[in-house]
Amino acid sequence: MRALRFLPPRAADERAVLARSPMERVAAAAGGRLVRHAGWNIAAAFADPATERRRLAETVAFSDRSHLFKLELQAPPRQLAAAVAEAGEGLELEPGCAGRAAGAWWCPVTPSRVLVLGEPGEAAGVRRALEGAPAGLVDVSSGLAAMSLLGPQARELLARFCAIDVRPGVTPVRGFRPGSIARAPGYLLVESRDALLLMTGWALGGYLWRVVADAAEQLGGGPVGTEALARELADA
Image (cartoon, rainbow, N blue to C red; front, side, top):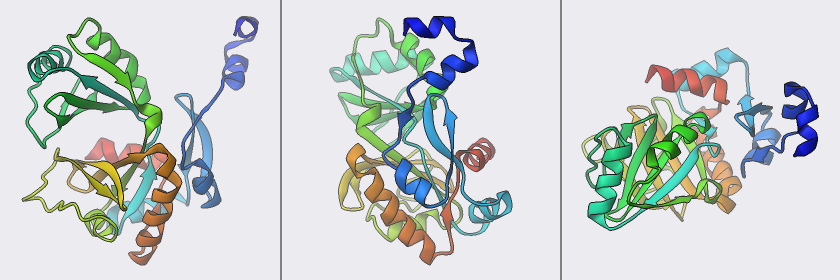
């Protein structure tokens, strides 16, 4: 690391070690254009912008989001609620329903565990907010692969490989459900009407990609990169 002091910022960035998603290889094989983003090597795009917009607007798309930061808060229920309220701008969580605060999702796993998710650029701010909180903090970013399903057929795509009921009356926007994802333990978060976030064990990332890709192809959908994904989530 000392040697990097003598390099200009761009050269130092080029020498920096990149974090790699468990879906990187299958994404590259699917034609993904890989770029550096917040310290990660991720797919920015797969097809022309018009094709990716059509998938998002008319059928279904999926995108690797394993680069999200994932922190787990652990404490007895009362202490945990106090820590979430202090760091999450007064946020009060309910079972089965995630909250949005301080640039992150706060997802109650059990009364004594909360999963905090967000874009890499928000991680430092969340950590600062949690300093001194009466709860244990564990970074599980490299333990969970993550993928978004997006578009009007996102729920139909999920139903092809997962039995979690995401009908709006059962799992509304902000609904958070632990359960079986493609026959593996995982989590599901409804980020918006047409955006579902899935998480499974890191080692199963490539497997999840292949399962989703096969099901999406049958619906006329396909992968999209982070460029299209950012626009979609910003408009949600």
